[in-house]
Image (tube, rainbow, N blue to C red; front, side, top):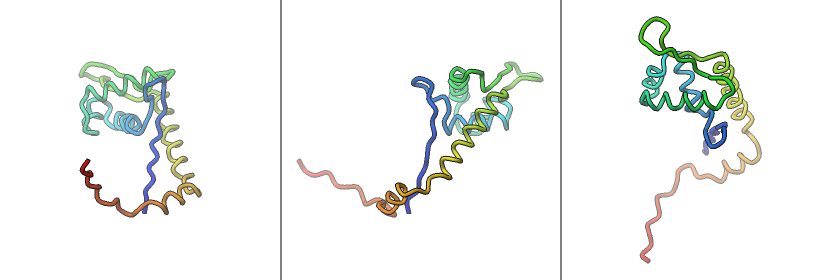
Length: 126
């Protein structure tokens, strides 16, 4: 049986402003209170996490993540109100798209797809 995976990406110019990975990062920042902790929990480097946050903050009208450097009380990262709203809207839209999928086009494709791919073809001698 075929599986359908919809990958919703929102673009700002050529940058991906929001996608599944960035939404997961926002969830992890909300849970851990830091970019480094969030990145670590997702198996990425702090630098990669920071770069993703930077793209989101530059692409949205208001920053999605607020950071307080340091190591003391109040340091870390948190989602702003705009970040919470953007994340909730993205998750809602994703869920809605996935729930609206059962349609004739998908049914036709599902019926045409094999349960497993055939073995790779051998290159022909040229």
